[in-house]
Image (cartoon, rainbow, N blue to C red; front, top):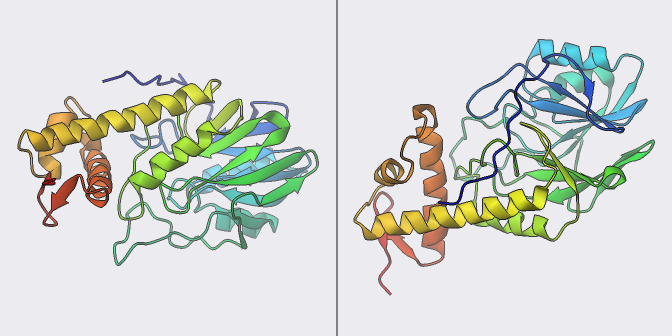
Amino acid sequence: MTALPLLKEDQVAYGRLEPVSPLVRRIVARNPGPFTYHGTGTYVVGRGKVAVIDPGPDLAAHVEALLDGLRGETVTHIVVTHTHHDHSPAAAEVKRRTGAVVVGCAPHGLAGEAVEEAADTGYAPDAVLEEGEAVTGPGWTLVAVATPGHTSNHLCFAMPEESTLFSGDHVMGWSTTVVAPPDGDMAAYRASLTKLLGREEKIYRPTHGPALLDPKAHVVAYAAHRQEREDAILARLAAGDETVEAIVASVYVGLDPRLFRAAGRSVLAHLVELVARGRVATDGTRYRLATR
């Protein structure tokens, strides 16, 4: 399997708002883990009148450090890429403390009766941004780019002033993105990767991990990785594997046990897509190659 160009960020300074470009600052929440890397990177765009992107988890210390770093400035917009617990819950408290409007993704898109464990169902935006809609401030613009897949409501935000895309969890440098049904959708995720290849931003700033300075190479590699995963799953079905658990054990050799469940969700996402394309058949529990 092709090696992914994974990036490392050796250490971060928690609780400190630090400049990463002329227009952008970042502060990292102390919520490290197997799905968050060092923690949630909350971005601040602009000076004086600013936007906060992905305010982060419901951690009082993180909100206090963010607002302390912005003392003397005005938060006009709280911009959210998607509704997972490490991205959006702090929006309510930042809004309460600053009076800023919450904009960006739609409320969490629950599919059927399934409630995703990581979902922030309390998120309530003042305005939902559709593809191409923007919010602005002195010297900065954030344009919504619809990138469903990781979640059905996932948005990235383009900032033309620095040829930057705030990529949320859609494209990260330190890890691949988990796509977990029912709200996560593999076909949508792969289409969103293809969509980004048609764009020209030179820098991606994901919510977790370091900036991507050669972003198209990462997008190409991540798309190839998903195709290789699909091929591996089809090969395991041809070899007689019938369940998600059996496929994970065969395909994800040496995986950190903490990630087994997430790997299973990604395998399921691939299987759902393959069933929709007619490549795989299922009785709802077991899977097999479809008869052509």
